[in-house]
Image 1 (cartoon, helix red, strand yellow):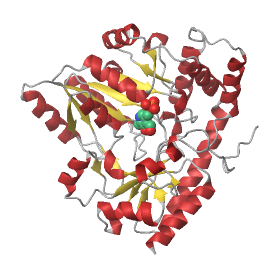
Image 2 (cartoon, helix red, strand yellow):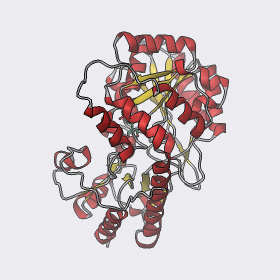
Image 3 (cartoon, protein in one colour):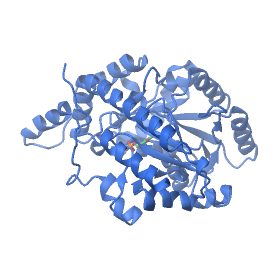
Amino acid sequence: MKKYDFGKDFDRSGSGDLKHEALLPRWGRNDLLPLWVADMDWETPHFITDALRKRLDHSLFGYTVLPPDFKPCIIDWVRDHHGWTIDPEWISFVPGIVRGISFAINVLCAANDAVVIQPPVYHPFRLTTVGNGHRLLRNPLREKPQGGYEMDFDNLRSVVEDFNSRGEGRVRFIIMSNPHNPAGICWDRDTLRRLANFAKEHHIIVISDEIHCDLALWDNRHIPFASVSEAAAQCSITFMAPTKTFNIAGLVSSYAIVPNDELRRRFYSWLEVNELNEPTLFAPIATIAAFRHGEEWRRQMLRYVEGNVDFVIDFMAKHIPLIRPIRPQASYLVWLDCRGLGLNHEELLDLFVNKARLALNDGEIFFGSEEENIAATGGKGHGFMRLNVGTQRSVLEQAMHRLADALS
Ligand SMILES: Cc1ncc(COP(=O)(O)O)c(C=O)c1O
């Protein structure tokens, strides 16, 4: 069996990668260790680059048909990894998951309709809803006493019923991150079933963004929303992709799965007339290579990520006990609860950026816009940062030492 080396240094320079190139424009300095945007620092595995190179050797890049194995490889992967049997006609290519969500909103939401999100959550859910002119409603996740979050179904009911009763429009969508970015939660079956029943009762479509689905850690399991009940299947649009798992976000390859006939007809016919369901030449090639040859790489990569998460948790417990990392059940993003430091938002950013020289995602974006966060916290900030541990252990060691030194 091939042993992959995730600890090996890999130089990303020259690839134009966002993680490094955006340091100066975003933070005003480029001496920061980049531990922010959700891609990984490991080179794209060779079974993918080999497949792409093989196609490049045929130097004709005209219009092409979808390779015949595109849908079968997705069907096999989803069945084998997540126990969900899907029909080929339920699947459509989409050019990116954020785009897929915004297409769905544009096609299926009327002008005055509203979309519910559950912050803290991946911020493009908010941006695409507001940017496309729809009402954004929030049902904040509830913190559990033992740490982590749960959905607040009582508040969800009042948020939805209150909006619907005003007669201005209807709540059309709930957008969910499953597994959850930024807190790494694999939502459990009971929660997903309750959400499905609620959505059915209120004629709401659940958009389940499952881009992190193949990254469950330790003995956690990802459960696809649509697989938990017939109600869930019939009220949902699921988005998945190989892009996070195999570090190929730049190739833009993702897909939607819609079991409901009427919903699928409306959504997919719009994608089709606008030719938005047509991949570029390389996206399906990379997807097939990943799903047919990537399992061993994925397993080894996840073991390495688990080691990184353990390292961060242990280091912080020993040296930075005022920051509490939330152990993710999935993916390589660690949600850091920094409230113990007692810093306001500006001070927290100053600590990470100017003192420790680290570029993490500012946790505020997952709660709301700058104005909303100021209004909610009076400028104190919510006190979270998101750390990307999809990198070499040596980089994380350096990062943790920088942070500990900055605090001492
Ligand atoms: C939950 C979630 N959805 C979607 C995306 C982005 O997907 P895409 O690049 O396919 O739009 C990310 C990337 O971080 C993500 O974390």
